[in-house]
Length: 497
Image (tube, rainbow, N blue to C red):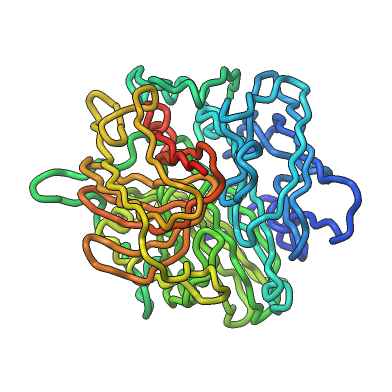
């Protein structure tokens, strides 16, 4: 391998923190709201300019980071030529601020400003459009809310924000994937858009569950993976042809916040020869799990603690499940030689967590009384059937798409268990708005699992989560695979007083 990175990459390596990984913070006592603008921007992908969406803060960078105790006070401006709406993924705002089209607030019109004000949930979160083609067009950004103990840690905080990307318009991509079924019964996610748009698998002790070939045989039926080959896979808006190189100290201590903002891609995060500890998922602490490779479905987040061994360049790669494509960032000490890494690996990775082995390993850390949930009797249980097929490309919850959905009901304050039973041959990352939940059962095995807002349910699997029903309102419950959502794989968790 040879040193062929561009001057831009080496300039990034010389900075203590770069724009995409060092998000701006505002002092705790700020009097004015933060500002965000939904806008367009131009990024370089493999030497080709691409016009994409963005969520730009007052300093001209993507995303926000808040200090402990700081309120989420934000004025959001729609600077796009189309209507849009932003969902604060992982947060529990008042329902009217949740960011779903017409539930209850309408899309923001061109030039409209909308204000938000609520106490945020701590952890690694993100924000994105709740119009599928806009999220596919990169209308998303990190949203980090730091905990006091994280501020006290002597760790450099780095964000790794993942996307899948096509140079073709998102509408065209979605139409090809869905075979014309996109926006089927999707009044709640409607909105027009006009966008144009080194092998690290060496053995490590600890958790490393992703070797081997893609796909799997499930009782004679083949699992469906990766229903579209995107043009590029991005980490902080860049590919491995010219990755972000982040300056770190010799023997440095890093907290890596990984956010999977991809529309339709699960990844394995590979720290290579440097051991890592998984310490949080979806923004919520877990009992640390050591290893070098950890998986994540769409919309999920991982916090990894990494203690660097000394001087050098340390790639952190995101490997596309069931494929050879990869992306990533490089952590480099001063003066370290940085070598080119191919954008494809030597072999395909396997499918992500088909047996839920990673999920079973995770245990909610008892950092607070709410993590994990306090034990109490279950007041209400629901079995939720996940179904669908590739031909026709149509995905359902309880046999229905959105227009014919039957709400999943609860009363505010009830302890509720939701069991997701996936009878399809694709995995589904299921996200519930306005709540967090604890994973309490996997394929009939009771566990004291992680606290999450998005749980992955592989084919022919069952996962049960427990939660306490919150504000009396209509809260969305949906698959976070954007083409699945676009065909109507969404229902509502209807909470009454």
